[in-house]
Image 1: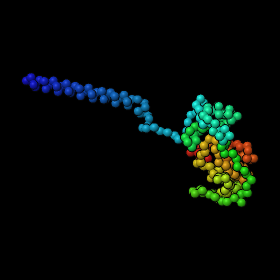
Image 2: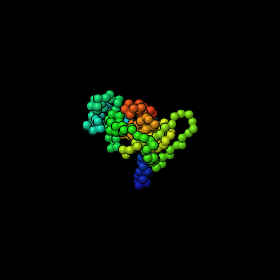
Image 3: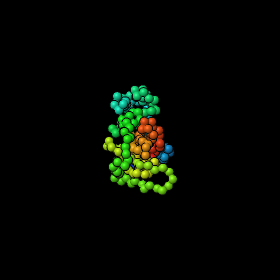
Image 4: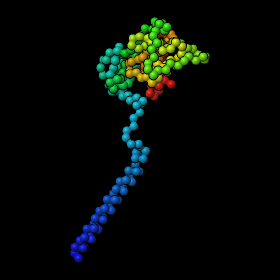
Length: 217
C-alpha cells in the first residue's frame, strides 16, 4: 500500500510538471506571435544593393585631389582641399569597397575631341546591338566611344537617346571616374549616377540621371 501511494504521488507530481511546461511553452509562443516583428518581417536580412549608403558628414573617407589620393578626410575637408562645394564631389564606393570622394571626373579628364568619325574603326563589344537608323524626325549623328586611349565608332547615324542607351545603360562608374563618348560634335560623359553632355568638351551639364542598376532607360 505504501509503495502504491508513493507511486501515485510521483505520477501526480510528474503530471503537474508536464502541465506547467506545456503552459509556459504556450505562453511564450503566444507572446511571439503577438509581436509585430514576428508577423511582418521576412526571414533573414534583405539588402537593396541600389541604395547608396547614408553619408555621415563627420566620417572620414578616401579623398582625391587632382587625381591623387590625399588621405582620409571628411566631405567638407575634401571639398575644401579641392576648392569646390561639398555637393560638387562624387561620393560613393570605389572598386576596393571603400567610401571615396572626388570632384566629378577628376580621375579621368576629357580626351581630345579632334576626331574624324569616318576614320575611326568600328568596334562593338560582344552582346551590343546597334539599332538601325530610323526614318523619323529628329537629328541623328555618329556615335563614338572613347576606350583604350582611342575612339571607336559604334554607328554612323543614330539618335542621341539611342547612342546614350547603347553606351551607358547598365554601366556604372566609381567616384571621380568617367567614361567618355561623342555624339556628333558633342561630348558625352558618364559619371556616378548620371550622364552629362558638353558642347565644348569643357563645360558639362546633366543630360539624364541613372536609375536603379545604372539604367538610363
